[in-house]
Amino acid sequence: MAFVDELLRDAGLSNAYADPLGATVEFVGAFVVVYLLGKTVVYPLVQRLLNRRDLDAHARKPLMKVSQIVVVFAAVAIAFAFAGFGNLLTSLATIAAAATLAIGLAMQDVLKNFVAGIFIFTDKPFRIGDWIEWDGNSGVVEDISLRVTRIRTFDNELLTVPNSNLTDDVIKNPVAKDQLRLKFVFGIGYDDDIERATDIIVEEAEKHPDILDDPAPSVRLTELGDSSVGLQSRIWIANPSRADYVKTRGEYVTNVKRRFDEEGIDIPYPNRTLEGGLELTNATDVVEPADD
Image (cartoon, rainbow, N blue to C red; front, side):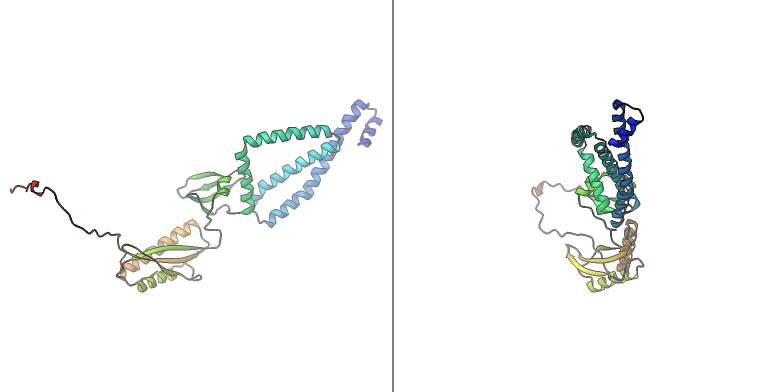
């Protein structure tokens, strides 16, 4: 800016000092103005967008860091251009592009996980505290970062999972909603009363305090096995967690089994009937045991 250069020359500085010093002052001034503008305009705008997405504080922190980096980068670029460092800015941009390409090739997995982490924060397939299942694994989410997600299994093992593994795979979140349906198949004998067994299964569901009345418990005959008739019970629980699921399911199945025993309804063991004959060869070679 010529005005700054003139002030420095009026102060007695020669052109050799006035020009670079003036450019430096212009750079610092432009950087401060753009940075403060970004802080007062961009940050609140990002906060508003995050509020609209209903992200929790844990998810907002890394996304706000990304926005801060973008603001600083933009402030530096604009300040370079404003101070007349156009050639330097072009050189730096070329170097930065080459460095970005090299880093991108060397760290493509890290960048892939970073992008996946942003998608997890914005799409919210799960939150901290949710019980999730994926690729044969299951556990409770303890921490979500931009690169990895930490999950505690039900054997108390801590899994550190790259975020790309979770975004590339199908994730089952049983506790995403406020209700969860449980299904269990009770096998009864072919000679047992199906209607009575169905009534018992429904009655025990209605008695349990943690099983919902609406949707109502239901029973369907789903299979005719080799040794049993399969009656599938479908029940619903509210505000589910892994502990609630295991506890309610265990208590309910125990109560139904007790009622079956009381009313003589059998839960048969699997059995097979083998038919055919047995042919012995060289029967004359069989030696009879000697009498004592």
